[in-house]
Image (cartoon, rainbow, N blue to C red; front, side, top):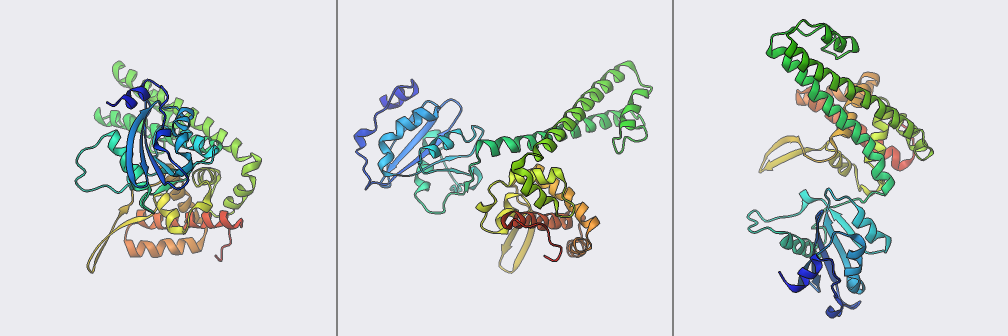
Length: 364
């Protein structure tokens, strides 16, 4: 480890003024961001200068890079669990920062060695190539916090599903008939689990599962109440009215769309919207042969689920949507594919409605 890197790890100042960067230079910086450290790679005029390891502190990172400001063209780092704090710090002082999608970074088939030092150099090198990196929008603090509540509900629903599976697996394993109402998980069906005649050990396990399920249901309802309260805030009023004018769209879909599809003007076309939401199918083509693949693994799963649920409601209440669904069903032969196609149309409708500030028009 070099002397500079040792100093950085101890949190001491590193002077980059010796590089003599001026406005005529072009400086690209790649940062590999981690919880305990930032690995920084610097390119000046397309030539790698060196890499550094510095403490994970936005203010000290700005101080460290200050001598490069005159020629700074672009700073990039990968989106990850550390969030957007570093990017917002750069934005506040007007530095050119972009966060890139990790899964979209071009990498060789046989990458060879990998390390944090090599990663930050790779990011800095790719940053000077136009359109090489796929960037993600940087939300405001408020936008990021808004969507966290929607995601919390999805996380609770996921836990609910897991506990329900555990209850049904226990009943199946020991040949115990499920009480009436359990197929739809009604309150009466859940309550009937307490009346089953089973051994004390099985009763202990089942009661534990039921207690956990009831707790999760209470937390979900509390979260849904909070989402409804947030939807009444003035800043959501106009767009909420616009989205809820679409058939099949309720409060959960509305708030999910508004919080996840923040800054809707950043999408260039409807294909980008579909891809962002994970509603775009993959395609494999070789010569004259074209094969449709499953949905691309992208986008927010919770919002995709809300859109698909809303699509079913749309199909049930709108004859035009029902006609689209039936046509897709005839073409694909699968209900799941057909309803995803309807959900994709709904998502694009909602996006256009937000951009234009117009409520739903059935003739559109």
